[in-house]
Length: 321
Image (cartoon, rainbow, N blue to C red; front, side, top):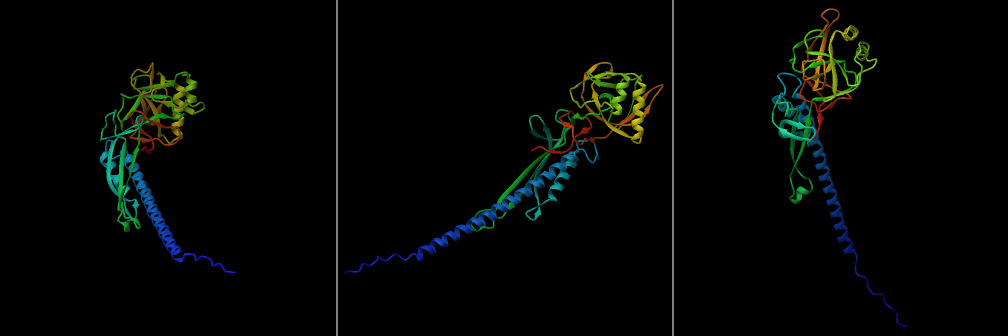
């Protein structure tokens, strides 16, 4: 019988070696690409943190510290740029490519550059862009890169358009004060201020005292809410104010609704909110309260909502874009 010979198989060693080498190159390429992408992601995050920090510091510097009448645009851009550059990006201080002050429209959510104290376009925001050139470790060997990355942040302060419950029942005429000046509200004379209650709330003497003592706090108030104004020396309310002021060391800063009138015997919408530091309460004859319309005050905590007109109460700095 003839023996059958098996056909010779082709030598597979060379094929395996080629495939192994190709697979190794692919693997190394993917690892290298992953390293470059991870590096880019890290740098992008560092750029964004630098932009965020600079924009927030710049927006706050429009008002604080108070070295001149706000908006302090030059101070805002200087401090914002300084804070942005203190942030390390890819091992070095971040590179600032642009910083601008401007107006942030809370409804349209748009930024308009400029420096204005006009009530319609009051400067409350800062936008800032950081940039960095990134060298690629793996893809650079193949002729790719370096790449330029940038991050942008916009931060706004904004004026308060809503205050939480607990405001004292005293309103102030927006036409009867200047920031930093002393104000005396005579409840039986001039009409630069007086008592108020929201629509539907009692304005009796005992009710006013309860609002002041927070036995029955007034509700949250919004710009545009209608309030009822009235005047007169309400002794129980003044006594309650005097007691609360003494418990605070005769220095009590509160936020009063401002109204566009000097006639405190009508119903009228709230025009905005004013930071008022109460320093003295006089009861009896010639009853009056005395205080100072404070420099710009920052309202922080729950219950405050931005979007009000430019008075002297500003909210917390927020990243808006």
